[in-house]
Length: 315
Length: 74
Figure: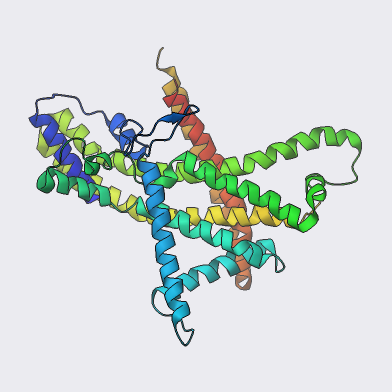
């Protein structure tokens, strides 16, 4: 976050130096820093059936996280399996801790003993992927790259390095990404119910049996709506939580520039920055680390609960 | 009169925070009280409190998203 602030200082200084005399627009700057950069795609691809297939920053981050998780986890597990004595060490210990926590703390209490091994792989994947995607948004890699580019590399306006500097870094802050994850949950619920009870029985299980028929007229639409609302809530919860923290940090940091503009002197901005913005944003960053963990946990827990609800029907 | 939607969004946001804070506060109070009465059941109580807590948080977040939509889609 310090780096981000320094970079913004630099950007602001450049703006002032080039005589742009543009007023600092906090809302626009913040949205630019957290949203996807559809205006500056990394690779430009044509539209197919009205859908833009260009590789934007969030897509890039998504691939980066997926590749990172795949390579690191596969490498660790392969190395572990090659040993003569199967004793985990180092990173493998941590990985086993995570898997065991997800299996015994999240999946087992909700899904039950019979199906725990069926659904643990999916939910562990969810947990590790969401956690890494969330966490990478907190590490200011791209702000550091921007600083290096500005002071050391001086690449051209259309270079690859410049194009990856635009836009937010947290892939899970994009509701399209979380919607895709929630769609997998939606499918998993149906598959779980079908595997446990059979296809027809699963849909019959949506509503309780043996009620008077007029109640079903009310109940069936509600239950069908609930089927779609649950993944929708998952989508919005993860995306909004990830975006919200970043917006809060950036809003507090933008006080520096707002105060500079208000008093017409850089000292006012620096004073506010030292006294208010930096301590507060450090605090919120610390809070964000907890939020990142909790949101990964919440997504996986709710997925496990919904799968469990499809398997153990309580009506 | 053109910027009344900002007023609506701000009031709505305040009401969301009041509601969510009341809900979470009651959860925390009830959980702390029951753990104090029966420390042995702390794990079970935490587990039982977690899920409705996240559902509550989800409702609050959804409301905040809609408030943001009011501002952005004016």
